[in-house]
Image (cartoon, rainbow, N blue to C red; front, side, top):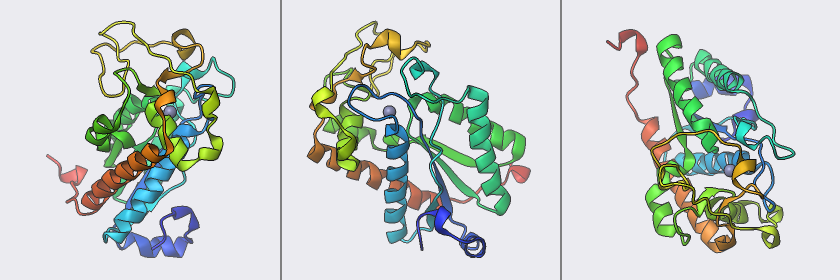
Length: 264
Ligand SMILES: [Zn+2]
C-alpha cells in the first residue's frame, strides 16, 4: 500500500476505502522561525512525521494513508516578520473542515488532523467539536509532539524556556530532516522570563492565555534555545516522535467507531 493519497487514482481510492483506512491530514503553518530556520518548518515537520509514521504503521499491519500537508495555518502572532503567510481563524477552520468533509463524504471514517503548529491547536479543537456536533463527522486532532512528551522531557538539555519556537526541539528536528535548510551559525537563544503565569515553554505552560505578537517578545523571532540543537539528538527525537505517532495510528485503525446518529 502506498502512503501518499496524492499518488492514488480514484478507482484505487475506491478500493482503499473498503479497507476502512486511517487518513492523516498534516496541518502546518508558514511563518518566521528566527534567523536560522526557514518559513516551512511546521509544515515540513508535520508532513514528514505523518508520512514516516504512516509508513511504520503500515509495516505494523494498519491501513494508513496521508494527504498533502495544509501548508498555511493560523499565524497572526508572526505576521510582523517578512514572509509569514497566515489565514484568519474562520478561514483556517473552514479549510480544515472542508478537507475533512470531503474525506468523510467519500467514506473515510478515521480522519486524523496531525498538527505541527501550536497556534493552530485551539482552532483544531473547535473544528473537532463542530464537525461532530454540526456535521456528524468524527475526526481526531493532535499536535505531533504531544504523543512523545515524556520522551521530549527526558531528551531536552535546555532549562524551562528552551523549547517554544524555533527552539532546541524544532531546530534539532530540522537538523535531522532538512539539514540543508538550517543555518546554525545564525541561531540565537532567547528566553522569555516574563511571569510564571504565562507559558514560556512547550512542556510547562502557565495558566493564562494572552495574545502577543512575536515581534514584541523576541527580536529574532526565536523563543527557546536553538544553540543546544544537534543533528544526532534531533534524529533520535524524530525517530521517537515518529514511533509514538505510529503507535497511535495502529491503535486508531482498530478503534470501534461511534456513529453520531446513534450516539445518545
Ligand atoms: Zn514551528
